[in-house]
Image (tube, rainbow, N blue to C red):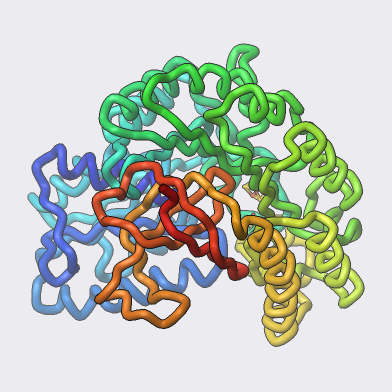
Amino acid sequence: MNKLDSNLVANSFAQAGFDLVDSPIDADVVLVNTCSVRGHAEERVMSLLGHLKHIKKTRKELVVAVFGCMAQRCKDALLKHEVVNIVCGPLQIPELVNLVNNALDHTKKQKSVSENIRHKPLPQDLVGLDDFEQNNDSAENSLPAQAFVRVMHGCDNFCSYCVVPYVRGPEVSRPPEKIIEQIKKLADTGAKQITLLGQTVNSYSYNGASFADLLYDVSKIDGIEWIKFVTCYPKNFDERIFQAMVDLPKVCRYLHIPAQSGSDRILKAMNRHYTADEYLAILDRARQIVPDIAIAGDFIVGFCGETDEDFQKSAELIRKAQYKNSFIFKYSTRPGTRADEKLIDDVPMEIKKQRNIELLAVQEKVSEEWNKSFIGKTVKVLVEGVSKKSHLDGVDNEKLPQLIGRTAGDCIVVFDGAADLAGGFADVKITRASALTLFGQAAD
Ligand code: 5AD
Ligand code: SF4
């Protein structure tokens, strides 16, 4: 979601005549996109602002705009920071160009955020944001031939640890016709893969149209070859989404479905509204309908009150779920959330770190098994570009560059090939696999 917002903002500035430079040292304007999901992300923003202070000492006219979730969360506290000229919430990003132009004209600080973020916006309130997304989305920004498209804003789930409902506001689905129009435009400008974005895409709903309906419609768009989506909430799962994966060759057989914990007690404290068994039942249905589906999860370790026994249940769930990979996070208390207000962050950091390492090791074993099953097979990848990492066998990447690509099931593949394959599809025969990467040769 943040990558998309950064791309949209960058494009809106390019359209307004600004040039992108590589370093804040060369910039007249620094735009800082921010994330509030964990404390660490916010600390990094504060240290960046500290760094900008040194640059601004010699160039007082430098304009610094902070936008995104942290801008919405911290509002005036951020505006008071000595280097900050502009604070702009995630729903106000269409205003950024104007705010910056004002700041370039005079030095007064400006703020545009939602004053009552949980106030449900009327459809007309979101027209500006829709048009902004429509006009500034592009298949050029992130990886070649790939684009993100938001299908919904915000979230109404209020998981007790999570700041998102308080910074991105209520859940609102975008009109399907706007989404389709945007994707058609992206396809015309070279997008081959679209990733549909939302905090809980499986609860997408617009005038009776469900997310599965949207998949069938997006699938009809010429030029788009792969459709991915993130992320899903493991409750009221519409099985037609799995059926769409079977019916529609363009819909990738990949499901990111965060569990967060394997302990029912902790899931309750997290306000997740399902048990570990109910969660596993969704995965079972997914695999019955789509046998080769790749499943990925998210986990939080060290949530309030998590005992070693609770933690072991998360390890058990990873083994049972047979994820291709999991994203694992140490619990970070977020001001204003229910966990922050009602529960005690009582797991010491040392234990959180240990549990994080332990859970990653459990997942690594499972991922290795998953990846090994591809050895000897030929997989189709969308090529992202030249791999930045050295070869597994130690060959210098500068002398013999390799390409990196991703399968429809989200496996990372490193293989030999010409750099101009970037943005295209390639068939790769897999010869070796680690927990994180598949290695192979372009198939004839
Ligand atoms: N602390 C740690 N991890 C968090 N996540 C969300 N909120 C927190 C928090 N307060 C994780 C969840 C979510 C992912 C995007 O970030 O696992 O799925
Ligand atoms: Fe946060 Fe829960 Fe909403 Fe995901 S579903 S964004 S974890 S509140």
